Amino acid sequence: MRQRVLLCITLICLLTAVWAGMAFAAPSSLENRYYAARDSLNALQKDAKRNKFRQPWVDLGERFDKLHASNPKHRLASTILYRAAKSYDGLARRSFNSNDANEAIKRYYKVAEDYPSSVLADDALLDAAILQRDLLKNPAEARETLERLIKQFPKGDMVPKAKSMLTALPKTGSTASDASASAVSSAARDDDDSEPAIPSASARLTRIIWDPQRTTTRLTIKLDRPVAWALFSQRPNAQKGQPARLILELPGTTPRKDLFGARINTGLLKGFRVDLQSDGTTQVRFDFTTFRRFAINVAKDGSSLVIDVNNNQNSLKKGKSIGSAIYSPQRANLVGSRATTDIARQLGLNVRTIVLDAGHGGNDPGTMHNGIRESSLTLEMSKRLKAQLVKRGFTVRTTRDKDGRLSLGERVRFANAVKGDLFISIHVNANRNSKISGFETYFLNFASSNSAARVAAVENAVGDRNLGSLEGILADIVLGARTQESRHLANNVQRHTLRNLKREKFVTKDGGVRSAPFFVLMGSGMPGVLIELGYCTNPGEAKRLKRNDYLNALAVGIANGIASYAEQLNP
Image 1 (cartoon, helix red, strand yellow):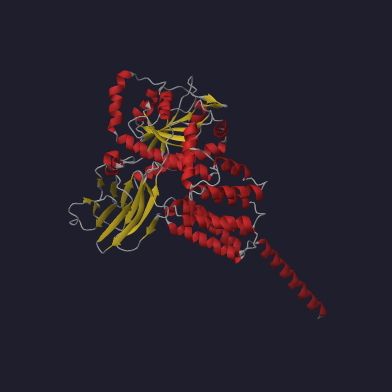
Image 2 (spheres, rainbow, N blue to C red):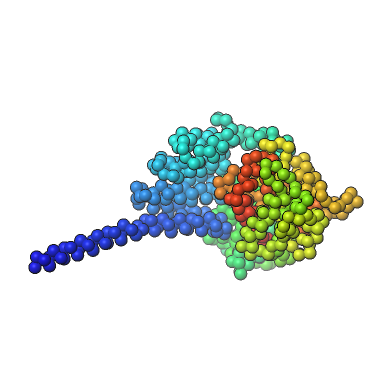
């Protein structure tokens, strides 16, 4: 009997030990929930449709917060809190709302304060400083945060980036406007005709009011001064799940920081979103359950736009049917006019075939500095970009796949022969001033600055056209349809490329979107842009251009910009 009891006790102990071991080896419930939340955050960051809305980001932030609060001493606690900060960071970068930015910063600080031994502690402070600099426009706070990072984590891997960022910040005590002035002044020292992305004299979009009724919705757009505008409408696309839509464009206008959009469940209006584009144009996209006609009226002082939307074909007699566009009297001055895009939509045009043109080649090596040979690097980038675009479903044709020379005329004739929809020419820049750096995107028009004229002269040097072609060249530029589409494509490429470089933790100067009369863009019968990947005459930029991870980040960003343009053309 005694032996049986001992045997039972032994079995119980063994089973308990096995169970304990299994429990120890298996992931805890908190870990499983964290990994699920992390995967949701990664998916949201990649989902271009969902991440435009506020609620998914807020839901994820609260989800991480609850996980952290359930066990702040768990081995993953610092990582969970950092992900919570990242959720609000992602929201802030889409909402331009200072409250959202501060929510992210609060969590970043808490990571550094509560978990100083975590490998993410210095990352958190750097991310906080970036938000303070870029979204809150507070260089003084960004400086304090960076100095704290360097002092608290002197051996952290973020210290070099923090020091680099500190050097570029204005001196302590500067205001946001001082910082802007400093940035413009610095750019002017590098390049005496640099172009600020947003003019200081921008008008301000201050408020959007909606008044939903049963069959009509009235939208009131409040501005601080009269502006030029364009209003486009799009029919719904059931196959793509796209609703009926109005797009209001306000060139030379910036939105109030906390004006980002809303979801609405009453009347015809479903919601709206506000975006500031890289050329200084504010775009407001209104989504509707349905509508058939719309009209717009301007207040006498020009400070308000009133848009009426109705689902009755016989209403709004002075309005327009869905699928049409309305422009302000100043529409000829619109910087980012989408008139031609509206025509493209109505004609059902879209983007299928993209022609990639690797600049120079053969006995024309292009620029060569700091170990960079332009013809070799452009060919390498063409191959990487092709792979990214093919993954996104585009047909890609390349003007050259090896180191051979092609004249500009041959490149153009190839692009037209394969009936390309977009033409992307890839180059590497150079300047006598080795301090100048930056990623730049050009579209076809007259040169917008002395530096743009200089770049055009360099890239046109191997052209096979002469002064006798002047009349035809001018007619091509004045025609304007491709110019407007190319401008819009250039804005998308520039914005998405810089966004992806920043996401990959690369610090690259925004050289801006510029216009210039490149021959290679004139002859192709399609919208196109010429991309300058960077300045090989700048030692730091040349070093980056030799790195595989940097070239991959460039390729992904450019491909994202092209895909974004194509999606907007056919939403």
